[in-house]
Image (cartoon, rainbow, N blue to C red; front, side, top):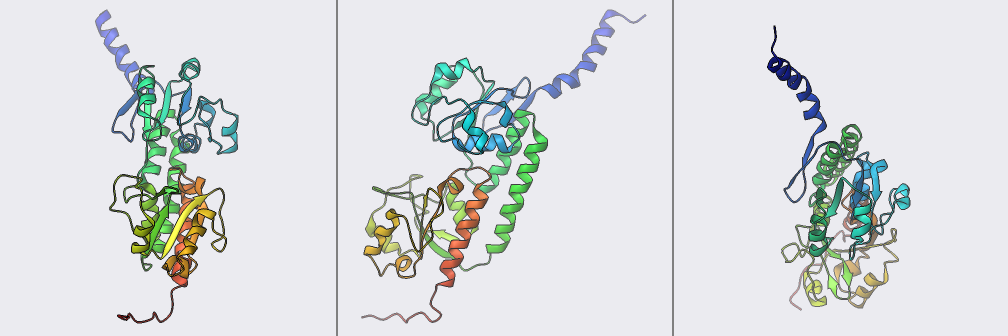
Amino acid sequence: MNSPHFFAIALATLLAPAIAQATVSARDDDGNTITLAAPAQRVITLAPHATELVFAAGGGAKLVGTVAYSDYPPAAQAIARVGDNKALDLERIAALKPDLIVVWRHGNAERQTDALKALHIPLFFSEPTHLDDIATSLDRLGTLLGTRPAADAAAASFSRDIAALRTRYASRPPVTVFFQVWDRPLMTLNGTHLISDVIRLCGGRNVFASLQPLVPTVSDEAVLAANPEAIVTTGSGATPSNAPLPSLARWRAWPALTAVARGNLFSIDGDLLTRPAPRIAQGAAALCADLDAARARRPAHPAPLTNK
């Protein structure tokens, strides 16, 4: 006769695969491994790009809270707000009983993050720094949400779009670029920022890639000395290059600046370029097209250099 101990072992053996299947784990962009007893069912996102990532990964129906400016896709606008990047409503967050919170590592203040940790709710830190990281983020979120089929499809589609752009522009002549984040004070991005990865994808070269910190402040004189072939900024909706945003029109005070002389002042929809989510492929395509326009405006026979 089989002993009770035998039956206990047999039962445990049968249940082990189900238990293992229920538990999900994924690593976030801060290097932490998040393990959930089961796929998340109630999720809060604390940045607009995180909201887009969760929707793209197939988890939109699981979102119970988000922050200001989470406006894409349109369904995101109906989700309850729990604050913005400056202040969070911790009581509201706790009341929504999330089993996963997706946090913007640099966008959410450290004091807010510490307060969130005190709630003992699993946190997934999101901060893609390379284009390929977006597909990885979709895969990881798909694991934690239990939506891998949708997440894998979205990741594959995004990777195909980026690969096509990379193939198309890999051999184009380089274009020097000044990316203007803000004009007063004048701010840019260094080479480790995701947007610099987009610039590289398009065959561009960030003239301030070597600066520190991530978002350095520069002077007009530094930009004039770098003499970029193109100046790029972001705005609300795409703006034709012949009608740049006021923050770029300021550069017309220096008509000898190459970007000004050739009409290479470009504005791109900020939501498509600054949010590290799948739509950045659209922003990348727009930037690549602008840099191609800059190449087309090069003089056929550049004037020779003189000592005068």
